[in-house]
Image 1 (tube, rainbow, N blue to C red):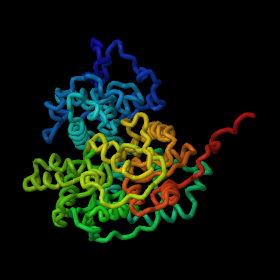
Image 2: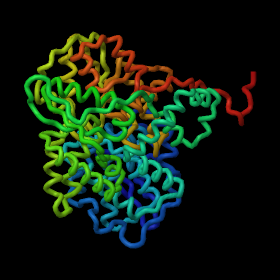
Image 3: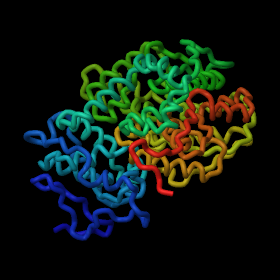
Image 4: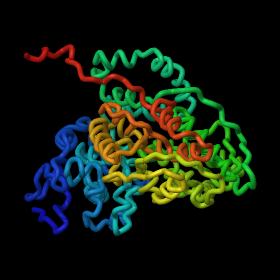
Length: 515
């Protein structure tokens, strides 16, 4: 029998036969902070998930970087993480909280097998790192979850359908050339209006949920201008920087990269954009695909070493957080550890660098209200919160409006909205409602995943809203772009959401409603 603590029930533990032992006094699905659990709680916490998974023979962890027992010991189960954890907020399930997942890791070190339940709880973590911001003990949850997921990737065989989905995702999105090859067919699909017709007919609802998510998240494509390999600073040169163009950012949001180059040059930076950049490895690292992530990291290191830059600038939050972890990722690689640390020390988010340099380019007024949405891997993983706000407040006549529950992830989380579409949808709606509640004219964020997730959710709710990257707002202010032109492009320009008619219609397999 396990007793409750003053901070809530102790985590459930997996018994030898793979069942889950719960404290006698803990309800299966308690309300969270007085709010009923989300509709997806049943599927997320009971029976569904990975029925084909089997415990690996022998020890659940192999000898290649298992989760560090010392880092696990830093968690004192205080519960400060609970109200900031998206899955705990949705479901009220202790094992879907950071301290519950840490307990699963601890059990693994003590010999507990990876059963279907433990794998599901670990998979359902978004990796948003909000728990790290909230934790008073400084628990390094990012290192724990990534090392554990690497173990799962090596030692757990997933159901065939999930293996195929993951293969599709991780053999496509981290490869810029493959993404660029999709631009032509996707642009033709969008221009033809086929997607709108399929949505109106209800055909898209019959697709598997992950494919529905992929189709709905695909942003509007426009012309891509090739970025110059070298853009000189305007006026006195203050720094030489290299731009990481990114995979999704470079393919689907080229306007953000173009705006980044213009702003950097206007603020006195020589900008180098190396050709043939590879993925930074963020998606692979966060999914536990360690060898793949290390291979990408080495390629990026070589690319920017050859560029000879002072700073590597990143304008996608997930990529930036990953570059800053290169030293940890390659710590055991002979000849690479020091190079990785050096590159990580040069990596900066665009807002970090601009705030550090201070403005020299004049700002023109942009009389508008902005709902600033904190990207998790910028605010939590990189602790970059004040800098974007400082820069936006430096634009004359611009007003920032803060979101309620700003610490809660929007549900994008890299590939989470493709692998776990239902909870991602619920979190997206929660974030979209918080954005709408501000009454702002435009949402501003710092990550392409957040952009697609929230903009798509708003459109599905019938509330289309302009969305822009922080650097696009700064670029418009520096260039004197009229606010109505900025908002129009943020609503209907490249990278925005197509306004499909998704009005629900009777399913072809269902009976008509009774009058």
